[in-house]
Length: 165
Image 1 (cartoon, helix red, strand yellow):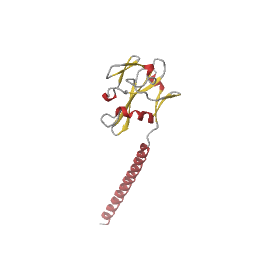
Image 2 (tube, helix red, strand yellow):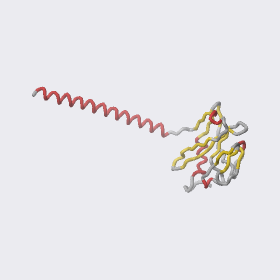
Image 3 (spheres, helix red, strand yellow):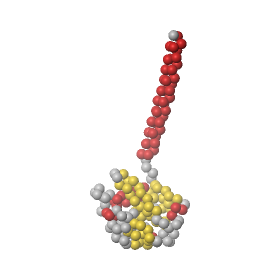
Image 4 (cartoon, helix red, strand yellow):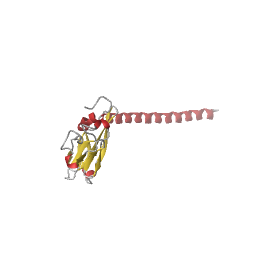
């Protein structure tokens, strides 16, 4: 009978050790998840793209989540004069339709009214049906767009939420 009493104690010690390890791992995971949440709470101040991504002249379309269910859309294109340009995928006139632009050769075409805009005019001409300019900067081999500048385009993407002009 003496041997039988020892085994349950050994078994219970192993069980307690395993439970302690599991609790310790759970605590570590909890702490690590808190660190990730704290890091995610501070959004980046800028969005950076490799400039080489735009060398072929094809417009590339992007989205930025602005919160409250609003997604801001924009495009970046290297124009025929070699300048990398950026604009919101919307304009002052047709933005309520939410259709944006498509690229046809060296032109961006409004998907709502069909007007065509030469790539060399993006970021130069604004208002009307022109693609709404988005401030950008080329630093070395990077194209940089400040998040605050992206958020300024929120007015074009707040369909039915009291936004817009």
